[in-house]
Length: 123
Image (tube, rainbow, N blue to C red; front, side, top):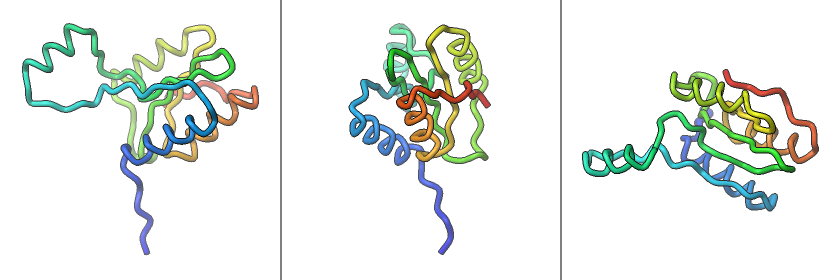
């Protein structure tokens, strides 16, 4: 049977469940809400919704960990995502990552919980 890559929604649900199991304070940053409503688009823009903000913000041992989820290695960050990741990477105590699949997200979270954060990855 061929390997089926999970869609990003499935990976997101796994990351959220894992953060809950580990007792972490986290949020999913819901920037991907699609709508054809110009009223909603304009409202979001007025409220400061900014394209490219990473998918998850997790507080781990006093640090902020941002996770930009990708399904697999074929999926690359957009220009806006790269800009956000770079800006976040310049902040003290902030660790932005691009992770491919749930296993990479779990590895990053566990490394931070163990006090051994991997280098900031923004590829």
